[in-house]
Image (tube, rainbow, N blue to C red; front, side, top):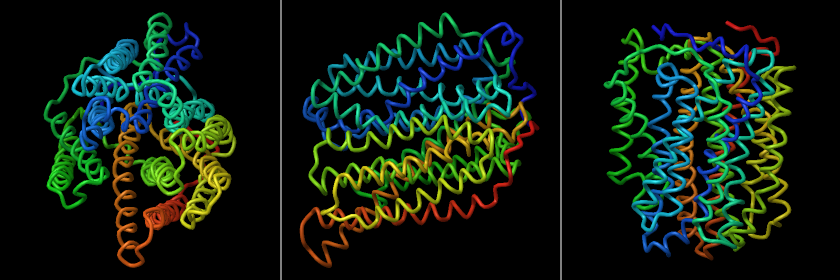
Amino acid sequence: MAFDASVTPTKQITDMKKGPLIAVMIIGAFVAVLNETLMNVALSEIMVQLNITASIAQWLTTSYMLTIGILIPITAYLMQRFTTRQLYLTAMGLFTLGTFIAGVSPNFELLLAGRVIQAAGTGIILPLMSAVVLALISPEKRGRVMGALGVVILFAPAIGPTVSGVIIVYFSWRMLFFFVLPIAIFALLFSWKMLRNVIDVTKLKLDFISVLFSTLGFGGIVYGFSSAGKGGAGWASLEVLIGILVGCVGLIFFTIRQNRLEHPMLSLRPFSFPLFTIGAIILTLTMMAMFSSMILLPMFLQDGLNISALQTGLAMLPGGIIMGIMSPLSGKLFDKYGARWLSRIGLVIVAVTLLLFSFLDINVTLGKIILLHSFMMLGISLFMMPIMTMSLNQLPKEFYSHGSAILNTVQQVSGAIGTALLITIMSRGQEAYMEKFGGSYELSLTSGVNQAFLFACGTIVFTFLISLLIKDTSKVKQP
């Protein structure tokens, strides 16, 4: 049985403008999501300046994903226990504090603490943003607003490497945080003045056993797969195996616990709505394709074609810009036509692009890569936010916070899983090429990257088959 409290607009909404509220959500979420990929290019410089190894430096990205993966499932409860204003100000305050600590940190330990505090804010902001939109915007208009949110969810991580590459070339890695800090402070002050409560709250007690199982489950899965994705000992290491095992056991007990509670921390009832379940599966699988672009392509450009980090970031910028432009447009198309054909067209574009990526060689021109990457970002932008909107539109109001938390959680978890799988496939392909043909590092890396892209293509083809189950959603009816 779900929470009795419905995530519905409060009476204050009739006396306020919705635009400023959504704007402050977008600004805060943009800088928060940007930080997920902002550190990737900077790790090498941080390793030198702080005198740490690569395995230690990886914790700056792993800890960010881990914290978000643990915290997002709990936000369904937080959104019903605290007011929108309290929760957003707390989240944005944590993110701002963490950004400042990371920027001034004299050592790795304090830098890591700053990243964890940043991630704690991010983990609250993302599902809160989606739930607020559901509470404020009528179903027939949600597509265009969710499309605007797509600029945050899709565009921000896409341009992260570009922004990071430019800053690292001309400034210190600390500028990555000082660049974000003024924007975070502005969002905090703006929300302090403009934000009002949007969602009715109830004084429900937190089930600490659910929190424990959630932390072990989602945290273990993200940690285990993230550890495998770092390379190192790979899948056979105890670190990876124990993390995944603990995660799976934790998720089993978490599911059993939620189904038995009268007021679950994270209701799994949204999965009883077929289109929500289909949407969640599609989002899970397609996140892997997005990560194939964000992880494999920079590695191929820098290590296979010997292009600098700055050039790599700039090469991926056109695709990010296209995604930022197309996300609001795809939202409007969703309001008019629904998600069925948008998702299928987008998935076909992504599948074809990934197939072409699987034939890359060391003689490929940078212009061709930019063109393929741009088409891939176009395809992703056509279906990502429409699928998310379609999924959430199926739910009754009392499940808004739960559905939002579920979709944000599966995206974080699938990101960790996708990263690990793709890097493993690439590494195995590289090793097999060296054993069979020998040759240069660049040729073996290219072979491994080709195989990883081909796997990602197969994943998208399977996702396309699932999309055939989507019914006509152009005429949205609120449950």
